[in-house]
Image 1 (cartoon, rainbow, N blue to C red):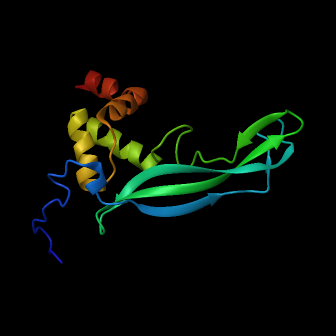
Image 2 (cartoon, one colour; image 1 turned 90 degrees about the vertical axis):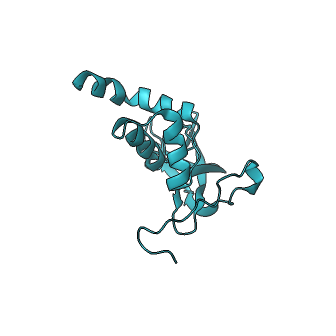
Length: 155
């Protein structure tokens, strides 16, 4: 076990094939409920079916592996509104996102606070946190937060 300040080479350096990268550590989570209140009308809605979603989270520094959250969640049907809705997962990630809030905030912080370029921030996320995020995705997150513009006006 290396001590503090001891250099440890990156095991993934020089790998050119995705298949050769370390396999992610899978953590299973459940947001599966029999009944939920409809967000539109507060009517009790029964579960219609179960679904699964995969979110990429900040990696495990000890095992040097990425972490994927496999979330089983319930989809409900409101008989009053006649609309479908999913169990709430906004505490983990934004709707439609493949990454958790921790990954998004870490990426935005790398660019805004440290002043890193988007490509460099993408590399830092992989090297330090074992999560791969395309640099264009990081750019979209930073622009959506408006942080870069606010900091540019201050300086």
